Image (cartoon, rainbow, N blue to C red; front, side):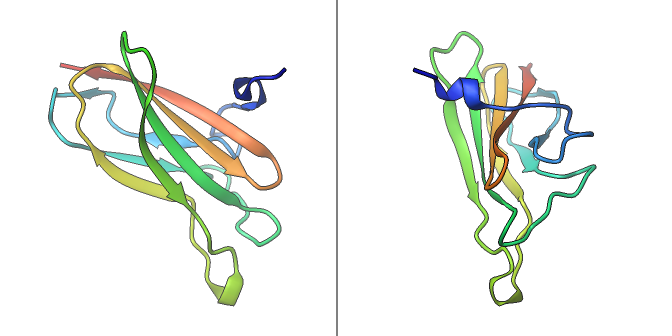
Length: 124
């Protein structure tokens, strides 16, 4: 039996339009709020049509030494041209962390499947 992890694809977001881009500082102060932005297609625009689109982005944080990741946010993108309305695959949230760890972002393209990226966050 395959695990879901075996189906995740990744790459350099500068050359692959499906990879989530995690925008945040690499070092934060413990307990201090910071902005976390995740987007798709920063360098190469991803199509946003009914036939080909990003459906959602999920963001998790795995604290250093922690047993499992904690879900931070889910961003759903539902408008892909219906009624001439389009939403872009960008999500922003504000987060407070007390421990260093890794932020993971997953995205889902209706044609090309699941994509992932990660970023280490240091806490001082």
